[in-house]
Image (cartoon, rainbow, N blue to C red):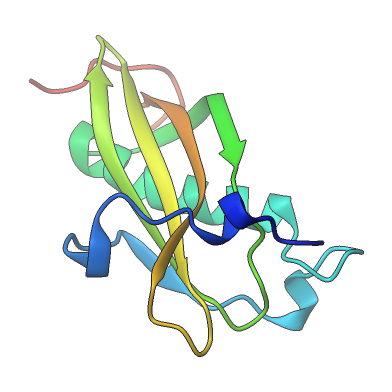
Length: 137
């Protein structure tokens, strides 16, 4: 995949990892798609794991993913990139929690943070039987 001038200059919103990531990992060759980049489903799963952590903390218990209401893939992720997933709760409903997620990478030999994906994930707080329950205030 050719990188355009715009793609090469898409900086992360918060430079130098000033905020703490929820999840940090490095993709491996088994995570590649047919184009040699990291498979989009792998990226979504990492974002969902991180969002679930934030949602569960907010709900003070179990949550389940109910929707991804927005998703944007800005740049590809490469094998060996340091992948950091950030999130913030943007809305708390009676049983639901909306989390805005952002994925930032640092290329293997370049410490410059690059925003590669962002999305909005919705979780619902659930009880021990898997039924929706109110989010504690």
